[in-house]
Length: 478
Image (tube, rainbow, N blue to C red):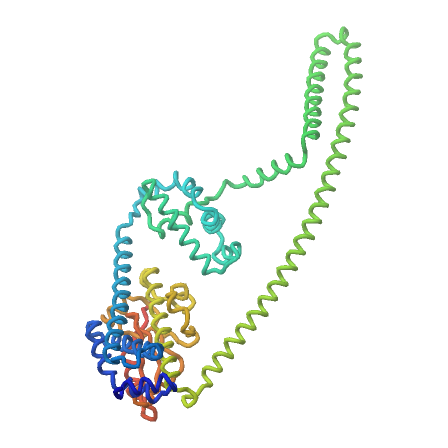
C-alpha cells in the first residue's frame, strides 16, 4: 500500500482531515490541469470542476477499494464532471438561441391583430377550466395579479406563471387558426380589446328590467296585464261616449248614463286590483328586506372569518421572520475557529452555487424582459434553477445589489460581462488545502458565474477593493 492509499485509508477509518488535506495537496495540480483542458481554458469553470471532484472524493471515499489507483480515479471523475458541466452549458446556449430565433420569427402585423378578433372567444372556450379561468380573471374581469392569486388560492408570482402558461396555450390554439402572435402581443391584444365600455346608462336599464321581472312573478304579471287591458277599454268607452254625445246627444243620453254606470263599476274593480297589486308589492319588499338582512349577516360572518385567518397568517409570518432572523444570527455568530476545514469547504460550495444560481436567475429575468435586469431579488426569484434552489440554503438576504440596468449597457461597458451584479453583504473565511485562511466574499457576475474575491487574513484589503472597483459598472441613465 503506497502513501496515498494509506492517507485515504486513514481518512476513511478515522475521518482524518489532515490526511484528506494532504491528498488534496498532492493531486490538486493533476485535477486542475485536466479540468482546465476539458473546459477550454476557462479558469473559473476549471476551479468549479476541481472543487466538485474533491467533494466527490470526500463523499465516496468509503466506497473505493483499498488498492485503488487514486490518480486514475480522480482523472476519470474530472472527465465526467467536466463533460456533464459542458453539456449543460451547451444545452443552455442552444435554448437561448432558439428563444431569440422564435422571437424574431413572430408576426405582430396589424393583419394578425385584426384576424384574432373573430376567433378569440372560440379559442378561449377550448382551453381547460383553470387556464380559461385565469384568462377571464386577468383580461376580461381586469383584475390585478394579486387579486388573481387570491381568487385561485395562490400567490401573486404563481398567478403570473399560470397566466403566462395559459397565454402560451391560447397562442397555440390561435396559431392553428392561422393567427401567429407572440405571447406578449397576445397579452396586449387581450388587455386592450377583450372588454370595451358599454353605452352609458345601459347597465341601469338592464338591472331595472331584470329586477322587475324577477320580483313580479307569473301570477302578478298576469294581473298587471288585466289591469292594462281594462285601462285601454276605459279609454275606448270614453272616446265612444264623447263622439256619440256630439252627434246625437238626445238619442244616446240614456245609453250614455248606462255606460257611465258600467264605467264606475269598472273603476271600482280597477281600484280593487290596484289594492291587490300594492299588497303584493309590499309583500315582495318585505321578502327582499329579509333576504338582505340574512345576506348581510352571512357577509359579516364571512368577514369575521377572513379577519381571523388574516390574523393567524400574520402571526405565522412573524414566526417565520423570527426564525429567519435567528438563522441569520446563528450563521453570522459562527467564527472561523468553530468551523472545520471540511465544513468551510461545504459552506464555500453552497455559497458558490447560491451566487451562480441567483446570477443565472437575473440573466433569465433579463431575457424575458427586453434585456432589463431585475430591480430586486424578489423579481428574479421565479427564475431560480430548480437544481440549485434545493440544498444550498443560501437566500437573498445574504447579498446586496450593485447594478440595476440592462445587459446591453453592460456589453458596451464590459464585452466579457465580468461586471458585478451583486455581492455578499459580509466577509467570511475560506481556508485552502495548505491551511491558510483568507477573508472574502462571492461576487455574482453578469456572465452567470460567481467569483470569490479575497485577501489573506491579517493583510491590507487594498487589492480586494481594487478588484471590486474595477469590476463595477454604472447603472443605466433613466
